[in-house]
Image (cartoon, rainbow, N blue to C red; front, side, top):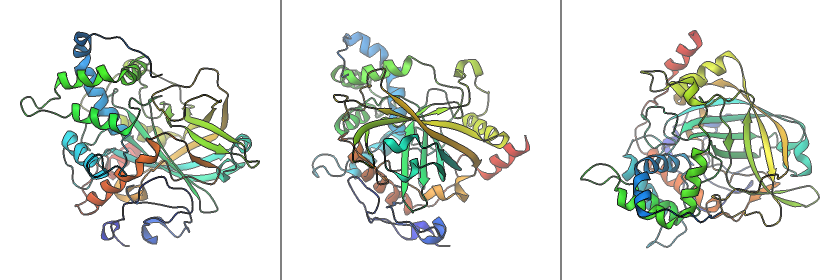
Amino acid sequence: MNDPKESKPSIELGHRTAGQSVATPPDGLRGNRQMTSDRTLERENRPVSLTAAEILGRSAGIGILLLAVMGAFFYLDGGFSPHKLTQARFVDGFEKVNGVHPGFRRNHAKGLPVTGYFDSNGNGTRISKAVVFLPGRVPVIGRFSLGTGDPNTADAPGIPRGLGIEYQMPDGEEWRTAMINLPIFPFKDPQAFYDNMMASAPVPETHKPDPAKQAAFMASHPETVHALEVFKSKEPSSGFDNATFYGLTAFIFTSGEGKATPVRWMLVPDQPYVAASAAGTPGGDKNYLFNGVIASILQHPLEWHLILTLGQPGDPTNNSTSEWPAGREQVDVGTLTLNTVEAEETSQTRVVNFDPLVLPAGISPSDDPLLSARSGVYSESFTRRAGEKEEPSAITAADIRKGAQQ
């Protein structure tokens, strides 16, 4: 079997839709299934009045959370001028904040692959002509992850959790989604993202972020302050298995009749919500979130309902920091089931980029500036790690075997 590192992908920027040609892995890496969709390897504003003292007083906790959020959802544009923002510059910044960990993704470094299937109930066909919404079942592969660029980070309730899913349709099309367990995003555009990353970088004197720089960023970005207040309004769940995962950005769904509808989606678990504080944190187990979901899947399949929220005229599609008004129509379009877990060293997800702009016919990008900017940094990240020695992940095959014996 060919090593995916023997052939580095070229860097492709902008959004990707089904049928575009991009770098593909050797057939041996992805089985014999013919792929006709594209694939890459590694691939409201609300006024807030805070005094400078109040902002500084919050800086420590805010900095920790924002660093985690950056790891949870980091994609930025390589299409800026060389003197401004490029994908290489962003990856350099990410490495400055998290350190360099050869062989690992520059974000979502700690992860766990899963497989399963999606059962569509047919309710989505009136909203999108995408094949995935026809009644029936399609296979999926996915990956749970922590929002961090450090593969050895100890699990903790406050670190955002990610779930990437690739829906594999019988005609060869794919739909890839990248979600986190936060309902909105704290940065409205790539520049804000980068500015916060620089403000959050550790300084040599203390090896911690400079509170004054963080306070200055927060004072000039009320949408970020608002997002953090939203995050703090509900305690995280006790595990991956009972977390709700959000797509955050809007997409445009087009029906067979040509009607276009702005849509945001989320995965809502069948597993009952338990607050992290109620469940407690197992002492001495730095991988307790991952070990917990391994044990859960080995005991019984885990299920989430895919819920589409339908936007109305005037709802923002270009700002992931802004919630849509309450009361928007929500449609349950089917059930995602995850029933198998495996280690990264044996999983095809090791070379999968859960690029949210790999889309089937019937789903297209919105005008959100973060959406069109995501692919570049993933390509740069893979290009770098492709030339590095592959190190074992924190969650190994032995951990999975241990879970099976419990």
